[in-house]
Image (cartoon, rainbow over all chains, first blue to last red; front, top):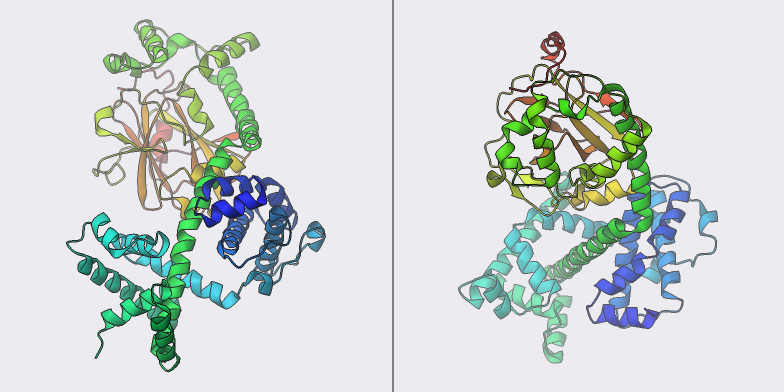
Length: 188
Length: 336
C-alpha cells in the first residue's frame, strides 16, 4: 500500500488493511524499543499507542504528512519511548534512535495532562454498564443516529434511547467528578 | 428553565457538529459566559475521544493478535522454545519412565464406547487395552529409531499438538462432552457446579507433574486469544505444561483440568499432557480430575522460572503431602 492509499483508507474508516500494513513495522520498531531498555510487553504497548496516535493524526483532514508514513511512525514511537523512559525514571538510549525523525509534543498535539484525563475517563468507561458502553460506541464512534440506536438496542422509542444516553453520560460525569475528589476510587 | 436533558442534547449536538452555523455561534456565545456549559462540552469531547480510542485499540489489538499468531518468525521462536523443551521432556520420559505401549493405563477401556466415537488414534489405544489389564508393567527404554517413529506418529495426533499452545482446540475425547461448551480459544466452560468449591480428596498413588519453559513472544500472543484476558497481558506469564501420570510415569488419559484465575474458571480436557499459561502474580488454582472422577487440587500454582526442565509439584496440597508419600505402592495401573 502506498502512503496515500493508507491515509485515504483510514479517512474512509476502512482501517483494518492499513493497520495490518503498518503493523509490519512492529518487529523492527520492537527491536529498537528493546534496545532502549524497555521490555517486550511495554514495547507492544508503545507500538500500539503510537499506531493509535498516528491514526488519530491521519484522521485529521488538516494534517499534512511531510515525511514517509513509516518514518513518521518511527518518530512517534521514539517520542513515546522517551515518554515511557521518563515515566519509569530510566535514561533514554538515544543512540538507537539516532536516524529517526524527531517529533515534539507540539508536532503531535500531545498533552500529558490531557492524556492523563483521557486515561482516567477510560477507566470510568470500564465502570459504566455494558448498555451504556454500547450507546456510547454507537453514538460517538459509529456516529449512528438515535433512531438507529433505539432500534439496534431495542428501545421502545427514540426518546427512551435519548433518555438512556443522557443517564449514561450523567453517570460517567458523576464518576469523573467523584474521581477528581477521590482519585483512588479508580485504582484497578 | 431548560431541563438538563435538553441542555445535554444541545451539548451533544454541538460536539457532534450537528448545529447550524447560526446555532453554533449562539451556543458558543452562551458557552463563553457559562463555565458549567464549558465543562460539559469538554467532558463530552473527551468522551468522544475515549470511545473512539477504545474502538481503535480494539481494532489494533485484533490485528496485532493475528499478526503475532501468523508471523513466521514468532512461530519459529515458539517452536524453537517449546520444541526443545518438548524433546527433552519426551526423551526423559521415554528413557526413564515409559513402559511398553501395552502398559497404558486402563482409563480408555472404561471409556471405550465414547472413545470409539472419536479419533482413530484413540481407537487404536483402546484396541490395545484388552491385553494391558493382564500385563505386568516393565520399563522400556526406547531406541533413537523408536523415538523418531513415535514422534512421527504423535505428530498426527491432535492431542499431542496441545503442547503447542492453549489456543488450539483441545481434543474432546468423549469426556462428558454434552455438559461442556467449547469457546473460540479452545477452552471448555463448565457449568456452575464448581469443581474448585468442592471438597476435593487427595488422589492417592497418582502424581501430577508440572513444568515450564521460557516464555516466548508467541505465548504472549496466545493470551490475546483468551476472551476477557486482553487487559491482563501485562502480567508476567509462563507457558506451562501439565503432565498427568501415575507413579510409574504412565500417562493417564482423558483427565480434565480446571484452572481458576482472574476470577474465571476454565476446564480443558487433557490427554496426559497440556500446555497452558500461568501468570506469576495471579493466584491460580488447578484441579486435575481423572477419568474415573478422582480429583486433585493444586493451590496457588506458582513456580520459579526453570528452563526446559520439569518440576514435580510436591503432593497436590501441602496438607495432603504426608498421605501422598505414604501411597507409594509401585506398579499401579488402574485408576479405579
